[in-house]
Amino acid sequence: MKAEIALQLWERLWQLYRARVSYTQTYEQMILQAGGTIANDHIAFRSLRLDIDTPAGKQNLGIEYLASVAEALGYKVAGEYVFPAQNLYARHYQHPEQERFDLPKLFISELIVEELEEAIASLIFQTVSDAQLLDITLMGDRNIEQLENIFTRPWSPPKQSVVEAVNKVTQYGAWVLLHGYAVNHFTGYVNRQHTPQYPDIETTANGLAALGVPMKAQIEGSLEVGLRQTATHAVKEMVAVTDDASGKLIQIPWTYAYYEIAERYQVETAGKQVLFDAFLGQNAQHLFEMTRKIS
Image 1 (cartoon, helix red, strand yellow):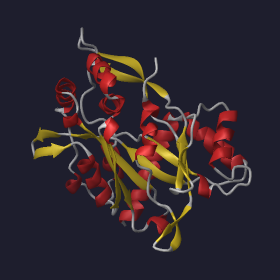
Image 2 (cartoon, rainbow, N blue to C red; image 1 turned 120 degrees about the vertical axis):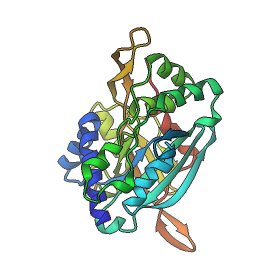
Image 3 (cartoon, helix red, strand yellow; image 1 turned 180 degrees about the horizontal axis):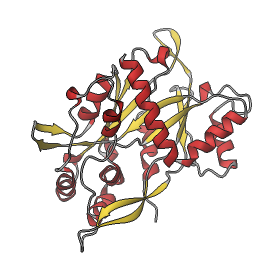
C-alpha cells in the first residue's frame, strides 16, 4: 500500500512540476517522437537544517522533516553526502519495492544554517520561524492531497531584502526561503529511453540543446564512478516576497527548477558488475548552482 501511495504522490508532484518547467515537456516530446520511453531516476528536494518552536515542541526543518515523509512511504536511507563548500549535507533514499513499482530514488539535501555567518543565519531563522508544518503521524495513508501540501513553502513570503542578502552568501538558502519544499528537480533516466536516436547522455543533451533548451555546459561524473549527469538551466518565475517599505506582497523574478538527465553504468562491487545506484559526491556540487539567480 505504501508503494502505491508513493507512486500516486510522485505522479501528482510530477504533473505540477512539468507544468512549471517547460523543458521537461520538450524532453518528453523529443524522446517519445523518437519512439522512446520516459522514466524518472530520482526526485530532489531542498531544506534547511535548523530548529523552530512549534505547538508540538522543537521541529527541525531539514532532512529530518522530509525524511519522516519518505520513511512513512516505505523509503530507506541508502547513502549520504557532504558538500562543505556550500555548507550542505544530503541523503538519498530508495524504496525496497523500487523495481516492482518503478519508484524513483529521493535525493534530499539541507543547508546547515548554523555554519553560516551569524547575521545571515539569524535572517533565515526569523523568516522561517512561523512555519506551519503538517504532522505526518496524523495523516491517513490515502490522503494524497495532504501529503502533496507538504511540498510547498510552509512559512510566510520572505522580505525582499532578506532574500537578496541571503542570496549573496548562499543562493541555495535564498531558493529555499522562496520555494520551501517544492520539487527542486526530476531526472530523466537515460538508460530507460530505449531509442537508438538518443542512446546516451551526450546525444540526449545535444538533442535538447538543438531544440533550444539551455543546457549546463559540462556533464558531471564518469563511467568509472558509475554515473554521469547534466541539467537544463533553471526556469525563471515570478515569486512572492514582502516589500520592506510597504509590507505588501510584490512579485519579483527568480529561478525555480531545472530538469536533470542521468545515465548510470556498471561498476564492480564485491567482485561483481552491478549498476551503480547511488549519487556523486563533491564532484557533482556544481549542479546545486543551476538555481543561481543571474540578473
